[in-house]
Image 1: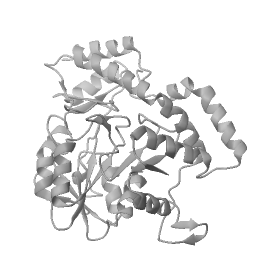
Image 2 (image 1 turned 180 degrees about the horizontal axis):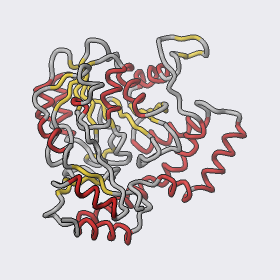
Image 3 (image 1 turned 90 degrees about the horizontal axis):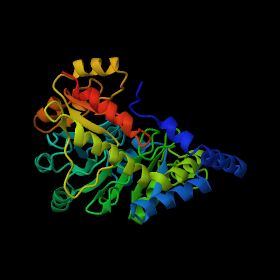
Length: 364
């Protein structure tokens, strides 16, 4: 079976470095928020181009803690999309705010900023811009809307580690950037992990309090916080992997180029690349009319695929009563029925990609 994603290959590739890092961490007798976490926070800030980073337990917590650090909660609204991992919406609700979901662009499958402007009310406090699949939303227009309406821009960069908009890395454009480091992400740990970026010192200090019970001094809570801490072993592994992130993103781009150049355009519609935005291809997404038939066909050919995301959040039972939609989300609903994610990861061999393409082009 050709895997859709294969984090184990990365483990094998860096196994010696990972073992040394884990052994070093075990010898320090430091397990949570120790020197490896501090090092990773420093490394990540330098990589993204922000003054501060705060390591947390996962990407969902990164969004919730970010919202709470901005005093966004009960009675407030946050605009985002329904076409996203449910975590983006779940985190808004966990912070006490109301998610307001808007439609997406048909060509890029990202938030439609013309819909954002229409969704803003006197309760709107922020827009959560999800940089889906590995490339940016239309940031120039979105920044202008946020500035004109005096609302905050928060970036969900969980699928776009290392991507840029106009030569500036995603996660440095808004007031806060939120990242997941789940194992399959472009920058992935060997378990759950997340990190938040900001240039605002006051927000940075509050996020540090929020991630650990509101403690400035151990056992004394300055504010109501929670437990969302990244552990030393995951941070040590991420400190290794971040060194190779740009190289691995380039490998993803090379694989994407093969798909774009050789896939049959009559059978498959490729999601477009945004101008002024680099793409790091966490996922390579195409649209196809006969999706169920194609999935069955590829299964027989032993090619694994994914669907991101088959169920829009606004149509899911667990969230219908907890969210608000602004207008019809017809493009979201239409695309969720015909999108498919093809195998893409840095270790995927060129000959394997060609084999996948040949099988796809032979599909009728």
